[in-house]
Structure formats: structure tokens, C-alpha cells
Image (cartoon, rainbow over all chains, first blue to last red; front, top):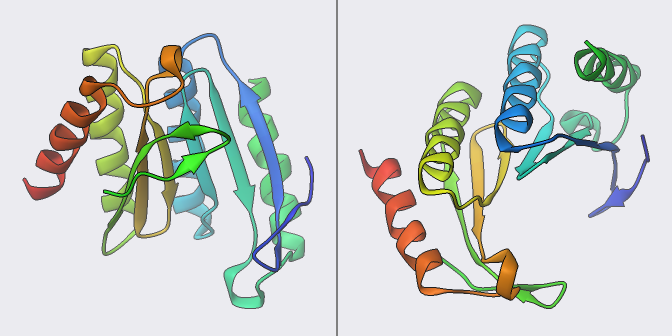
Length: 80
Length: 80
């Protein structure tokens, strides 16, 4: 994960690679469903063979402990 | 649609708004499935309540007639 500052907001960002579009789409959907369950929503950028996830807390325009927890959970979906 | 030049590549880009995350996710999936059917894949940026679609043709690093056709098809999913 990297922590770029975009428009003044620090985010946790990571790009995951996949062999094709379908696998990337499946991962994007898993993270989307995780987000709905947790009530915390990242930016999910889906392209052919890759997905970039960005976590931040809108209310504070920056990073909260929960974003780091979500980042770890996101990783666990990629490994499984 | 706008046509920004990003890293030297002209793209067709549009952001669609939704009432919640679920509706945005459903739209993202519709466009993802359209992309698989057509064998042409955009960038799909999903956030809470919005989806940004970017079409371009990787092989020519720019816009081809097909990108404009895909943009029109993308709109048709939003209207329906």
C-alpha cells in the first residue's frame, strides 16, 4: 500500500494485478460487497487485468484507523 | 462526455450519479459485462453514488470510432 495525497486527502492505495478482465471484475465485486457489509466505501478502479483500491475516511478527509483495517481485509480477498 | 488527455492518451470520459453505492455497483457491472461481450474494456471508477467510465483504444493510445459507439451504448444502460 502507498499513501498518496490526492486533492489534499491522504489515502491508502494499492493496485492488484489479474490475468484477465473477469478475474479483476470478480475481485472488484468482492471488495464492493465487503464495503457494503462494513458501511465504508473505497474508490474501486477496474481496468483490464487490474484493480486499484483507495481507502480514506470522507468525514475527516483523511485516514482513520478503520481504513488500515479495511486495507488488511482487502489484501485477504486477494490472497484467498 | 468529455475528452481529456491523460498521460498523452485522449479518452472519452463521463461520470454518472446514483442514489447509493448499490445502484452505482449495479451500473458498473452492467458496463463490465458489456465490455466483455464487446471485447473492449474501459476504465470503470466506482465510488459511493458515482461511476466514472473512460473509453479509449489501447492499441492506438487514443480514440477510435468504436470508443464513441461504446460511449453511446454506456449511456443507454444509464437511461434504462
